[in-house]
Length: 69
Image 1 (tube, rainbow, N blue to C red):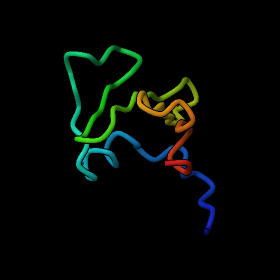
Image 2: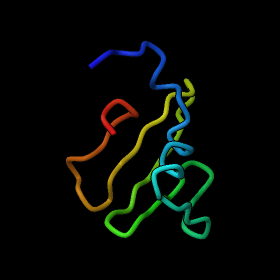
Image 3: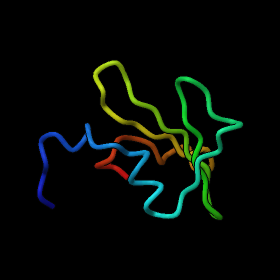
Image 4: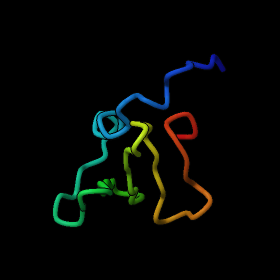
């Protein structure tokens, strides 16, 4: 796998939307965006360094950045 140095800065929220995930605006907060599809629910945020991270609510072991996704 080729490593892209700045990949962690890519907009993970847009990637999710293009892959069938839908934003749940009612459950999202200023810090966490809630995305879901028919199989799982993800919490997504951008930290102070503008790096994107996600957390899978249905699988505690599935979390990380865009590279892990």
